[in-house]
Length: 96
Image (cartoon, rainbow, N blue to C red):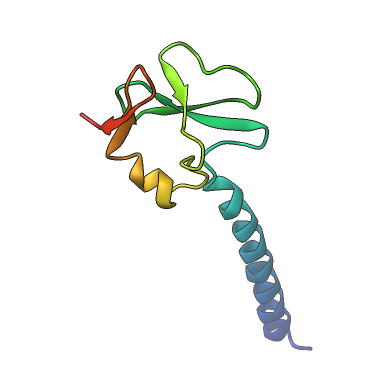
């Protein structure tokens, strides 16, 4: 095998490996929260945070209503909560 052929094969293998690694990191990078965490929303705001699963939301935050929890950046509920928020009673209201 010529020197140029080996370089081309090596470059192809490296590009393939980089593609696999970036595909793996993309699927976890677009998650709203890490494993073992749940998203919460700031009362009266579209700001969010993540809390450990099973723990209470910090003061000034509420858990999302059941069935309306964003899981990934840009999903249906992530987009929805860009223009909606929760009031202090947990009622869905338009975001300011």
